[in-house]
Image 1 (tube, rainbow, N blue to C red):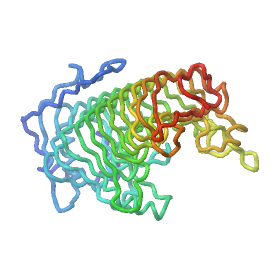
Image 2 (image 1 turned 180 degrees about the vertical axis):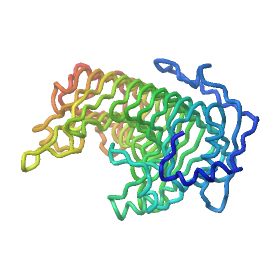
Image 3 (image 1 turned 90 degrees about the vertical axis):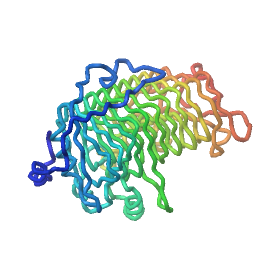
Length: 439
């Protein structure tokens, strides 16, 4: 197991710790039923190929807000390669950035609460940094055949972070949970609350199943929750996310660059920005691909969008002729995406597709996107939009006809609060494929 260099000093404690005691009492991980649709291939956790677990390691909490990181690492050391780490006391505190890699055939049964104290100065200096969108994390996990479950809670104590961000928009805030290089894993029946930034980041991972989760991000004052994406996938494939409830203020799920073979089904999302492809094409010289995604039987309530695809326009040159970095102009493709069976409850737009993300109409026309959006289906949508754009209920806008190929809408039945006929903005689209009222 690889541990971040900054915490090597803890290892001498780990070797002597009695707080992670291996026992022969074994608890079985929950059986996860994938339904109603099945992924393209089975997940490891649903097969008999996963290594049996043969021992259990209990993590004792120190209490009083003291750091339980050493005890957790000791338990992992004892139970890696075929064990179950039990976190079943009332409250655990993680005050140290943890890089937990080289895991093999290990489960984490979390029935207590794990919290991250809001030591903003420490986490800003020590959290794990990622080049992608300048993101960071409290901890990151990697390895093979890993399961997290147990009915407990992971609490990011986000409120102080949101309050601080309201005063300093440059403040980097940690992601609550990062799978970085997980191959064959599952997360089920856990609660997550108050992430400073995103809830989950799945990066460089394959064969991950997520089910039965409850995610909640709600502010207790006038400072809003910020960037509380439920799950963001990046450089990852063969992912299933299902049967979960999310209350947040940003994307419910977002498929970031180079995400493929993903199934999302039976989610109940409230307050979000939708189930989103993108944003993509943000960086000049970078190729982004998202393909083979099926989004089925989801409910989106009080959201800015239900289904959303967002790609950047071309980069507008600086005054000296150079191209800005991070302001669009990247290339790539969005391909074989299906939104099927979406229930809309007071969403501003039921569908929003744009290849002019973060760009004015004039700039988008002058510098059209280098991204291609191809073979996208929106079908079996029902519900009522919000009053915000009434009678408009959706928007499909491409910077050129050549950038949007074979985009179809079938059996889309969205009504308006006013009772007026629903209208759609359709720009540079093949309207013969759109069974909606384009105006």
